Image (cartoon, rainbow, N blue to C red):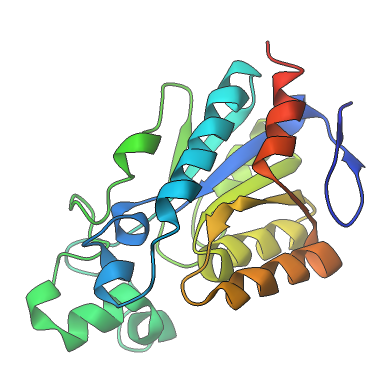
Length: 226
């Protein structure tokens, strides 16, 4: 099995049982005019993250590694947002913005809208999985766990936006369910200041998994392309 040059120590993984999880690479999070941008959050690093993820996906597909997209969004009537008794309905950013700015109602993270769509540069390809979710973690209320287990997946590479919210939430749940989480450090960015990204890297390296750079994962996957 290939050995990853990861932090805090190298680990061996079986790529036949690995997948890349692309978390919420949607216009809402990565594009000018999307939800994060409208909320005043700095997304200047999104283009670099998008390119790094694209490079990883290109090599991963050639190596036969499964690609899974997590896509956050709600029905137009918000019937799957949790309702007024759910904290998600009050704290999740799209919900908050659409309630406080009526002109945005139905436009943020709403299925079928531009904001909801995966960015053009990272469109899913035949053979990729797309899992829709309505909470920060991709494991909550979805088929993600069963989809991975039926394919024998045990090792998960994580990339996407935002490092400190949906990426870390899904990664923690993966760890709790005995997957091996590996965060692509330069394939993610935070919602907020860089210190939040660094905080997630610290949490992952010390408590929940491993981190690796794009260059290192490209070397590993490139050496085993099918």
